[in-house]
Picture 1 (cartoon, rainbow, N blue to C red):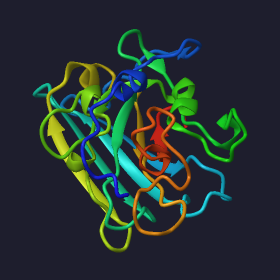
Picture 2: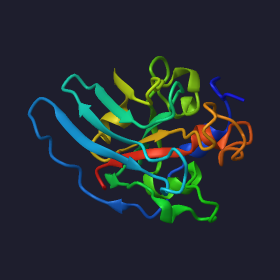
Picture 3: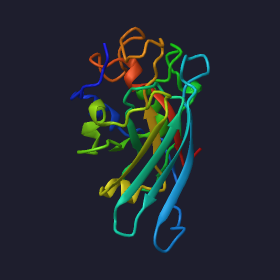
Picture 4: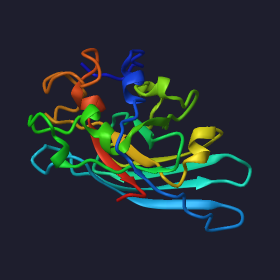
Length: 216
């Protein structure tokens, strides 16, 4: 079963949860009188033992002088010809630096770091990095509106948008990319089980593959 249709579920609410215990930090000063630009590498979330999980990438988040935010994501080694959900994660409120999860966050020892297991590290969703339309947490799993990796597993994404939460927290967000073809059959299916968010979505479609941000 290939999961490419939007999944309108309580999953968005789960993803928008913010957990306690994040380190408080002052926001960085604007490096330019005109544009605040923050660039990070995107690193694998999963252990090397997870098949097809060792992608690489980079991201840049810009707070523009017109009050808009521009996000660019470049990644390679992703599942080819498939949409990849991407989000800005963090805390909308007091300046809070979150971080990226790694294999140590596999709390249940099943070999995978799921979306839910990653939330204590990267926080809730501030922005869904869709290609068109809504960018709120309600679009967290709208796979028909996320960027699609090409036949080589390369993804290029740029979008400029207006959103208060993204603008206010541009210097502390984590950028998270999801989707791994664990069984290598070229489709998001349920062989590895359901998502940690909802039984209606496969684990493969929601599992975090890359993460990067200020705390890493």
